[in-house]
Image 1 (cartoon, rainbow, N blue to C red):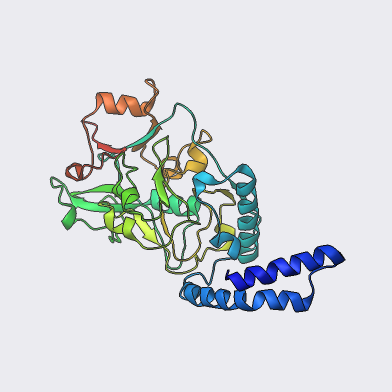
Image 2: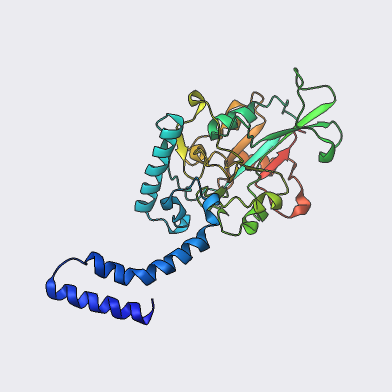
Length: 321
């Protein structure tokens, strides 16, 4: 504010205090003339954001980072998101901000010898996590490989056999590895993705700017970018949603597997594990010495995918023998 504007403001405040009348239109215009010029310049400076934020409300644009949100702020955000989803998809969603459990660190193990490549895990994941059906977004890729080899470059996740498993083939589902040293979190310029105390790497979809640096940093191709508004049939939407999990994402953000945190943080198994017909998936708390996941880690020969990347995954692979 210039010295002339300050003087005008002081004179007006003095006059209004004497008369105890509201600020007049004339005095308002006198004060605001110079300020309007500044605001116009500010608006021009922000104009490049117009196209980037065309789908974002002002409240969403000004939202604080997740770690700074008070319970009251989160309640307002959830109410807004529920209204938006109800308006766009014609359902009544229930969104919760489900926190990590104390004394819990999750890990996942998969028995490659039992997986038959049926992809039921893929579609259960889509159902639970409300991923777009058109274009189709899948968090899990099931790789088909030749028995006796581990050359991922020669694998295929586009196979369309009517019968599985195929002779001389084996199958390796790959999803977010929830890495202890996750390179994706380091690549994010705005801290929209981070590792939670229970080991789950999450994304705040209201904070993500869609730069896709995290996608480039991930050695497992475990993140997906929403190029368009998600298309999901009304009858296929899972209405129980988690803020950092399976709530319907907006266009222009990166999304990923979160070990179904809306389920697992409430004592349930991930959706992909529940539908597996061969029992090849094992999930649990590594801090519990009696958990099935600890049995696998202690009694089986396990290995991690792309160990040379140094990401220290929480997703393990093993065989029965």
